[in-house]
Structure formats: C-alpha cells, structure tokens
Length: 437
Image 1 (spheres, rainbow, N blue to C red):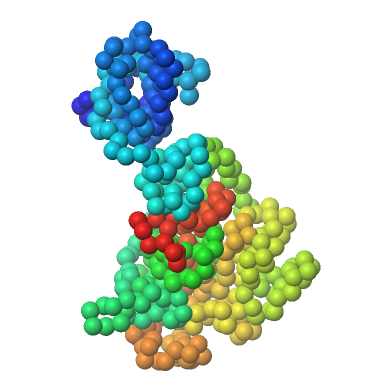
Image 2 (image 1 turned 30 degrees about the horizontal axis):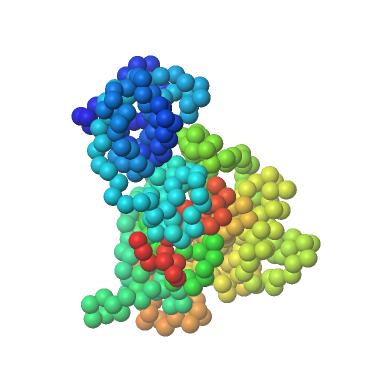
C-alpha cells in the first residue's frame, strides 16, 4: 500500500465512498469455517474486515493472521447491521506489513482483566485498549484547552528549570540528586520561578510541566512525578482574584471536553454535569462547623484529611449542586513560608484548596510580596536566611501584590472520569515502587 493513500479507520463510518484503504494492527481474529473476521484497529477506532471464502481470493482467505500483526487493507465498504457501527470492509487486497514476534504479555481489550501493575509495565500495549486510550485523549484535550484559555487571557507561557539548587518548600519531600560536585534537587514546583517572572514584569504567566515529590505514600491519589498546571498573576486584590482564573481555566477545559470528546465520554460511561455560575467558597472555620455537624471534629488550625474533604465535597453538591468548592483561609502552619497571612487571624492565610468531587485538586492563594515579612516568615518556618536569599532577591527591587496556583492534571482527569487510581491517568506512573518502563 502507498501509505499516503491510507485513510483513518473512522472514515469507514462517515464516508459515502464505496472503496477505502486502511491500515492498523489486528485486534482479534475469528475463524468460522468458510467465514473469517478480523477486527482491525488504528488510533481512530476499530472496523471489522469480513472474509467470506466465496467472495475473496484464495490468497487472501489463506493468509495467516494473529493479534498484533500490522496489516494494510483495501476493499469495499459494506453495510451490515450486525457489524460494529453497522459497516464492515470486504477486502480486495490485504498486505501483511509486519508479523507479531511474541505472544501478548497482557490481555488487550475486554477479554481477561490484567493486574494494573503488569499493564503499566506494557503501557504501549495497554493503550491499544480503546477504553484506556480514551483516558489520555481526554487528558490531552484538557491540556490543550487550558493552554488555549491562558493564551486567550494574555498569559505568557514559560519553561522553568527542573534541576534546582534548593528545595522549593521544604526538604521533607524532595528528590536529592548529584549535580557534578554539588548537591541539587528535582523541582517540587515552579513556584519561585513563576514569581521571578512576575518581578521581571510579565504580570501573567503559566507553565504546564513535570514536578517531583518524594511522596512515600502509596495511595490512589499520590504520585512521585506528575504534570502540574501552574499560573501566577500580578496586581491582585486578594486570593479571590486567583480563584476566578482557576474557575475560568477549569471550566473552559470541562466545556471543551464535553463538546470535543463526547464520544470518549460515552465510551467511558461518564457524564460531566453543569456547574453553578459561581463556584462556592467555604472558609476553614465554616468547614469546621460543617464537619462538626457530621460528627467529625477537627482543630481549627489543622489540615483537612481525606474524609473531611469528602464531607465538604458532599455538602457543596447537596447545597449548591456543585462538584467544585473552594476551601479558603487554610491554616498557616500547613502552608509554605511565602503564603500571605490572613489580616485578622495570623494563624490562617489568604490561601485555599479547590476540591473537586470531594478531593483536593488545586492549591493556591495570595503570596507575600513584602520582602521583610517574607524573611520573617521563612525564619518562622525554620529556614536559614542564606537558604532563601536567592529567592528573597526577587523582591528587593519592587514586588507587586500577586498570587497563583498549581493543579495536577492527573487528579483532574481522575475525578472527571471517576478512575479508581490516579495511576490510570498517568501514562508512565512513578511511585515508591515503580521506576520502569
């Protein structure tokens, strides 16, 4: 076959042409005596190739097919209501491009469920299951949409260093590496660099890139490497200005997925509900009252645990019919030193988490821009000033009030699709036990 003449398989179901040339890998073979069926797959879908012994050449009928073979097919499109999507291809030519060299190490498709860890070992085969592929097509759409939102709203995209000379927040969850004769770390976030860009005068910046956390947790919501959607904006009034940007970006991504990935959502059995015009905001003190009514007591200045997040998420759904809720004024003792403290209660901050279906999705807020207060807060968090001096340098020549946030795209997709484990939304998961492929 001349591959320049190859059509995507999805065209079989949309064209009015009678003849078509397609190529892909064999997903399934069925032999019924004088009738053979091949399920042929490419990135756009699956089509049935029908080989009746009486209607195809002896050479075509005698070809030896097995799952995983790469073949090219030219033939006539035939209507058959019993075929998948109502159409199939009756071949006039079949060329075997490449034969499979080994047995499949995992099950592909709807046959036998394979252990997730083994599936991740053979991700390239796992993705031949269209249900799995749809997850990453949706994730790609989410990333494109968020980039589009930021571009449409005059943000500059930038690319920060991922090898850094000091820990971004603390030394507790960083990966230490050897950098020639020096000690270095993998970046926990682009936080310092986002702020540096604002001090350079860019005012509105974003980055979508990898971040690294030495998380020892082996849970369904933690990864050691994930993709973070980060932005930072200057001249804000308070953290609510940051919330508006997040709602705009996430809302735009959801709308884009609903319209452009409707087929994927249907295959995965997922419906994206409409959200209220303004997402609700609940302060930490208000959360404590709600939790107390549910029989869960938390100290006012403690973090919300997973159970508390679920309760607050359920409350937002019942009261506002919202899958999203901002939890505002997080306690100072669990926030980084660069967070701005609350004006009325310094034990609280001008920072928040965005919960999505009862799980933390985003952390953000207003940053402290006054260098003298920043230095005091760094010491309060047990940093030595020399450890943060290069960061403080950003603020010594004028710093506007600013804020921003970071959102893990894998958690976003996990909650959209209600996946049981965040690893299902990560192409190549990295956790305390996984380092390959």
